[in-house]
Image (cartoon, rainbow, N blue to C red; front, side, top):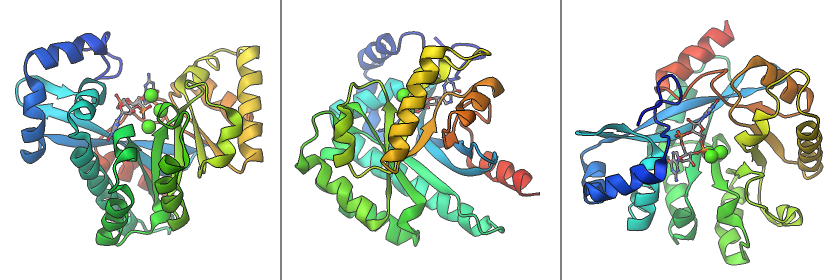
Length: 283
Ligand code: C2E
Ligand code: CA
Ligand code: CA
Ligand code: CA
């Protein structure tokens, strides 16, 4: 089901894949997969639109299955959530990504610390150990909390009450950045944004698509303009995902978006890719 030339791990029908994996009993091999070290992380650079500099990367988990090859997160994260494995898996991703970011900081010569973004699933948000675990991981790595950004999807926060926001607020108070992922897909109440301890809105890929042509789709321009102005009023940075062409990047830069991520800059890849990009960038 792999789409040739597209996202290596993107499947035409993720739900059918998930069903098939369940059928083949892969749910059972999930816990041992963690013990056997079958998960790995790819990093996709985050680029500042104003000057084109790489300032960090998002950690994206993959499963190197001994029989089925490399599986993308859409194929196993839902299973991990259903089985509760997402909590230890999520902690592993956090540990791994923070350790990687710490290494990047050591290798970095021009004093620009690279940051790392880690996705949090709704289960992890509800887990009582979230703040403790995160603080522990940062301490063990000796990393400044401000070098970490946790991404939470808009849908995970819909109707969020104080109990759910409290751990995020504690993390934000420690200096961890919180980003609202897939923004624009979850019908969130815009006035709710004020209550949330956010520093970044990550605009969903669907908005980037309207920026494909020259001139860009006028309705999409108005929408993005509105979101950027709202975000900046609330002191939030705007990151755009799914930037595949220079035309899109240019439109989004002109519209005032702060950071971009997408195939135009780099596909998710091994940690060395980021190091190379930054070094090339710095010369
Ligand atoms: P996401 O957080 O929205 O991540 C962005 C997705 O868009 C990634 O898919 C990335 O490979 C893809 N992408 C990046 N640039 C482009 C582009 O220019 N064009 C297109 N068409 N796609 C692009 P991926 O790696 O398959 O991850 C899918 C989702 O799985 C992520 O969506 C995230 O929600 C989830 N995920 C990934 N890693 C983790 C993790 O460690 N924990 C949790 N809870 N979820 C994760
Ligand atoms: Ca994300
Ligand atoms: Ca996203
Ligand atoms: Ca997404």
